[in-house]
Image (cartoon, rainbow, N blue to C red; front, side, top):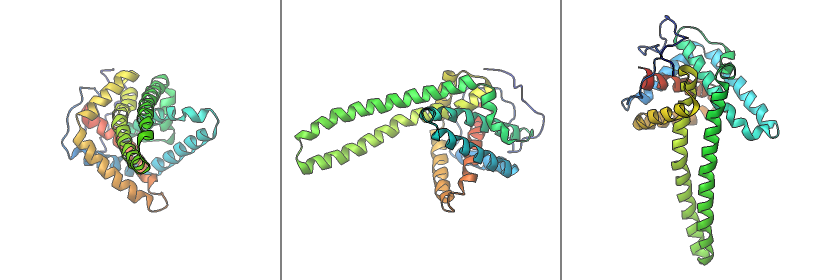
Length: 255
């Protein structure tokens, strides 16, 4: 990881008192209310350039939609997610340090750190496949015992089993999400390798479970509200979510 920040600007921080120095340190534990602060700081970044944020989000959706239509490519289209996340984080950093923002900033990950960001996507994909494979094998093993149940008993058993495996899937999926949440930011802004960034991301999330619980509740409520006006609210919610990755990253790893 780098100890100096090649992109540092002396301009004022637009989200308040957060430091613009990106010297990385071990993730720190924030208070419960930090989850709300991450969102409010992200909203300030959004409102500083709302038109560009919305345009960048539409461009991102178009790219993802086109990739989903291409045979074979659509199978690995998820690998671009860390790349675009890094781009949105980079755009947030530029705004935060007074450098402005352009739509093309979301493609910055394709110009720098491409291989490392793709590797983050590969690692997350492999881990997800492993989780699904393990749960599938367990489901098959338990499924064999269904033949020994009565019709009514089998139905109840199957329903209970479905709930258990759904909870297990979420339990196994959560650590993967924790590993990739901050990884693109750490790769883009701190020049970390893919796996070290994922480990650091996991540590940061683990030490801030309660703030992230509050963050998740607020984002969930906002997602419901955003869906009401024909999903148009997501043109605001998605930029805020991406910007919040940056604001959370700053409070946990930088400040």
